[in-house]
Image (cartoon, rainbow, N blue to C red; front, side, top):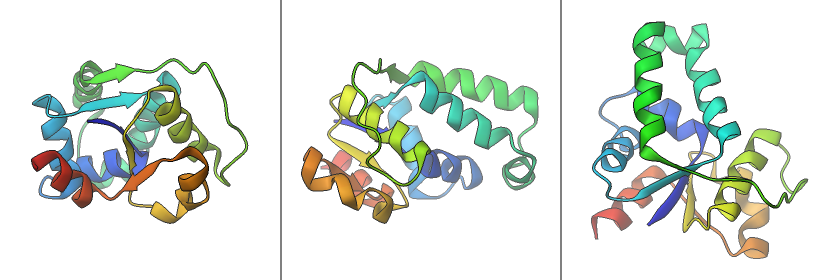
Amino acid sequence: MRLVLDTSVVVSAFRSRSGASNRLLQLAGARRFTMLATPALFLEYEDVLRRPEQRRIHGIGLRDLELLMRDLASLIEPVEVHFRWRPHLRDANDEMVLEAAMNGRADAIVTHNRRDFLSVIHEFRLRILSPAEALEEISE
């Protein structure tokens, strides 16, 4: 299974060690699915996780975060953007997720913000899953 994780999912994984988002990262590490991201999307993950308000919640120091990001990068199959489909979504950061999914031939986008992607489901024949739904499919 080929999945693009929205930034909301990656951030949730770092903020809580017990949730579905964190479990998804563990399964990515075990190579139970292929995690896809463009360089721009990966940089978005890193930017949000480095923000002071996020660091206060996840409690990870900058040096440790740098190491964790390196480890996360090793789990990701990099996606080159050959085609852009902008604008289709209201948020430019969501456009990065859509472009990673389409260029990487993803089976689905995993997000906590399903409504942000509803407008493109039919046009792109794209599945939008919550972290819990993605876990169910991976576990089957």
